[in-house]
Image (cartoon, rainbow, N blue to C red; front, side):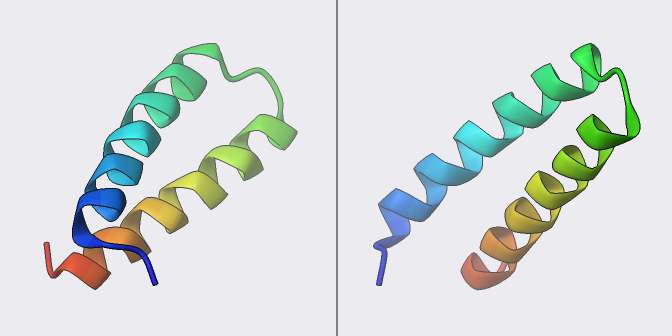
Length: 50
């Protein structure tokens, strides 16, 4: 189980990664990857109750 601090750090990493990927997206494959990252971000935020 990850600590709250680790989860918040991962949320921050994901937000940065998603914004980079969105600006650099080219094909449907990239969009699927972005969607998966957004789903991971949403689930981590849900765990923290944000």
